[in-house]
Length: 357
Ligand code: PMP
Image 1 (tube, rainbow, N blue to C red):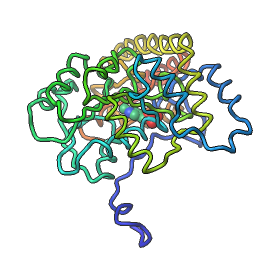
Image 2 (image 1 turned 45 degrees about the vertical axis):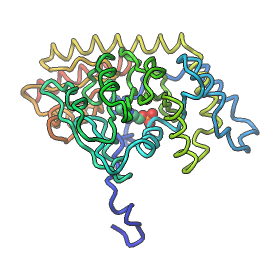
Image 3 (image 1 turned 90 degrees about the horizontal axis):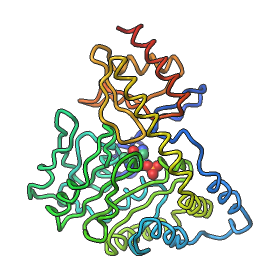
Image 4 (image 1 turned 120 degrees about the vertical axis):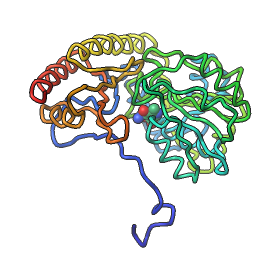
């Protein structure tokens, strides 16, 4: 606590981002980045946009990108919001839709930023425990209990498990007067998106990002899709905070990335194929792995502590993610890299198992 901090700054419990190491070069499988470069067309569009017009403010309504995104997803531009990474879109959504007088519901094992936003906006989270297999217990979200809204990722993070679309329909229909936010950061790696439900359900907000399946984590572009009244709510928050959320380069790069469907398919298919192979191989090494529909695996060994494995892998130059949190402190989250990176990971993992068992 500093005497210079406001009561708000003093009370916060900030998120700790995954490590971006600077000490040496690791095989970096700790922050779910895409191992393949962005579309060459997106890189060219970004380079082309770096011209004298950078002296001007960017378009505050991001028209070009909103229209391209709406076209891509078969929505009206009024059903699309764009922001500076989905973290920012989520922050705006927490402010726009959740009432501090009522609890906001989310799974107890989930993206850890949700708790941070709740604290920031003075909301009370009500954490719904996952079942023993890390499934989201739908009944606890649909029992008519008093709450002010729901948020969950699909697939969930870090468990990597997918909830079927029919369960999302149940969530939406049991909570017609509350906003349900589905955070689809990882949906392109084998899930079915809820975007198609947007025209039917005014209480649905789907959040997506270009950081994972489009290899553009460094550009910071996220989206929300929802009814006009929800998008208007997000605009009210954005324009009371920072009306120029997306810079000129991001705007042009994002449009080009969305237009390069062939490259997107090719790279996501590669990630999925690698995930399926490595998932089988870690099981052969004695690990348990959840049924991942994301660009990462969630694995645990019956006889070796995850923290030991994490440290030993790090010594061998492979960085994965370890969470010192209840129920998942014996798991590692391993992002899917290139085939070569994953082969190096498997070799290191096998050596660790031999050393630690
Ligand atoms: N949601 C989930 C579930 C995530 O794992 C992440 C990435 N850590 C994000 C949202 C944020 O992604 P970005 O801000 O890069 O769009």
